[in-house]
Length: 439
Image (tube, rainbow, N blue to C red; front, side):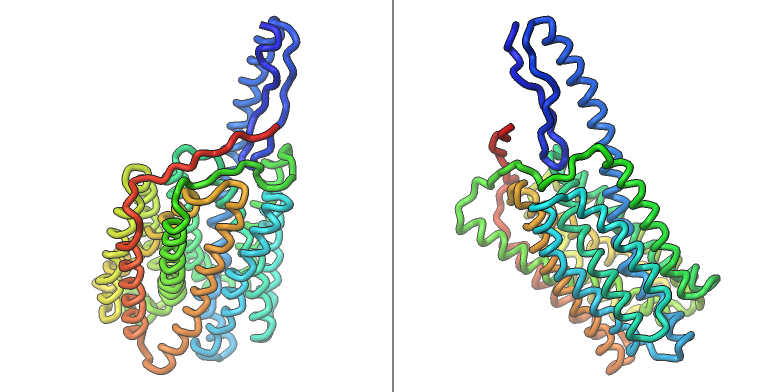
C-alpha cells in the first residue's frame, strides 16, 4: 500500500491547504489516516468556534451602527437640539459603512480575511468608545463616521469566511442573520437602558468594551490559522453570460431598494415608537424594549427564510417575501398603538427576511476566490443606497411632522423590488462546481 496516499491535507475556511504527512510505507498509511482523523476533528472544532465569533461579529456590527438612532433621543435632551438636526450626524457613518466595503473586500482577498476581521473587532471597539467622549456635534459626526469605516469590514469579509465550504448555505446565513438582527434589537434596548440609567455616553462605552472583548476571543480562536491571502479556491456558475448579467442586475435593484427600506425602518423605528406608542411607554428604556422585542421576533424570519432557501428555488422565496412587504409598509404609515406594534413586527419580519436571499444569490453565483469582492460590491450598493435613508427620514419628519409619507415611499420601493423578484430566473438551484485546489 506504499505510496497509496501521496499527501494528506485539510482545507480550512480560508481555503489554505496544509500538509499533514507523506506516506512511505503501508504501515504509515494507517498512522496517517488516524492523524488526519484527529486533525480534522480539531479543525472542525476550531471552525465551529471561529464561526461563533463571526456570528457574534455580525451582532456587534449592527449593534454599534444603531446605537445612535436611540441614543439621539437622550443626546437631544442633553444638548437641547431637535431630532431632525442631530440625526443627519449619522450620515457619514452610513456612507462609510457602504463605501469602505470595497477596499475591505479587496484587502481580504489579496491579504488576509482573518487579519481583516481582527482589525474589524478592535477598530469598532476603539471608535465606539472614542465617540462616547464627543463634546460637540462635529466630534460626534467624526466618531460615527469612524465607526462606519471599521463596521464596513464585516459583511464582505466575515460573511465570505462564513459561507466558505458550507453544505447548508441557507441555514448558515439564517443563523448569521439572527445574530445580526439581535444586534439591531439590543442596540435599541441597550442604548435606551444605558442612556436612561448612566447617560448617553455610556451607551457608546459599553458596546465598545464588548467589541474589544469579542476581538480578544476571535484572536484566541484564530491563533493557529495562517494569516494568508483569501481562499485559493475558484468556482464558476454554469450560466450563460446574458443570464448572469440579468441576475446581477436584479440583485442590484433588490439590494438598493432593500437597503433603503431596511435602513429607513430600523433608523426611524425608535422615533416612530416614541410618537406612536405613547400610550404604552414614555421612556427611552421602554421604547428600547419595544424595538428590541420587535426585532427579536422579526429575526426568526432569517431562520425560516434560510431553511426555505435550502428547500426551494430562490425565485419562489424572493417573490413571497417581497410581495408581503408592500401592504405592510403601506399600513404602517397610518397606524398607532397596539395595531402599529403588530404591523411593525410583521413588517420587520419580511424586511429582515430578504437579507439572506440577497446573500444566498451572491454565494451561489460567485466563485470563492473573489467572493469577498462580490460581497463588497453588493454591500457598497446596499449601504450606499441605505445612506439616503438618513436625510430622507430627517426631511420627511421636518416637513410633515409625521412618518406616513416615509412609509408610502418605502412601500413603492418594495413594489419595485417585487417587480425585480418576478423577473428573476426560474431555476430551482444554481450549483457551483468548484475546480480542484492545487496544493
